[in-house]
Length: 250
Image 1 (cartoon, rainbow, N blue to C red):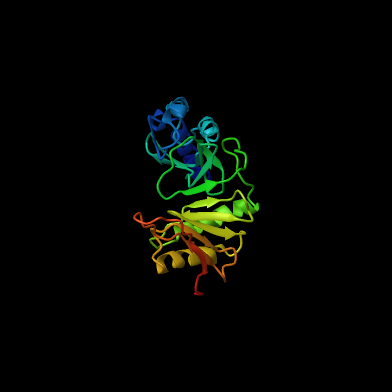
Image 2 (image 1 turned 60 degrees about the vertical axis):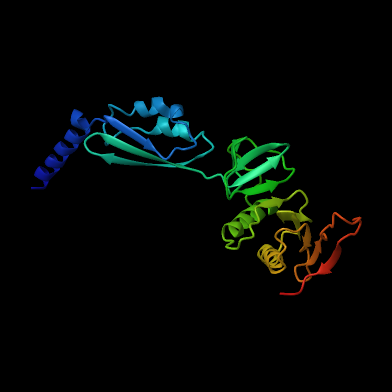
């Protein structure tokens, strides 16, 4: 009985892997908004005629793995001869501004695109670090800047207030800055980021400073300093200066 079952299974396997009925006749690729289909059209076409249970994806993966936006791939078989390929792409979340050029980066600072157009909701990064090759990281994973950018991005995504802080300047790690409209926000060192950003938002919204010009210094978050330029009266001679004040404690 066991021998008969084994023979039946062997016959079924031979039929499935050798019958022209199960040759691939259609390949559909989805998910690639950044990676052009023309880059791998030949490799996709080479799948046709292969057995649907034994097709070889190595050539296609070889092409895709060299694309900075490529993350992973999923395949589904629809008998008798259709393959659905879904490409997962990396997401550009950081826009690095350097020397007048925009560089789009993944959250972990991997460079995905040079000269690309930033999309709404990205983090805008200012720094002097040299630009890496495509597919390489601007910052190492365990570097202070790399860790800081990921934390800032995390907090930016979870900000539910109307005061959106989207830009971060890491040119000087002792005087990290962000800004809201015309208000410069000095964060100082890379510690207590959540507390500093919350205080900045509370000061702006609590003081109705959304349309003001000045700065908030949160280098010492327990004693923030706020400077707001006075409104100018165009009918009078204007030569007054703003004043520094300590914001009230939360």
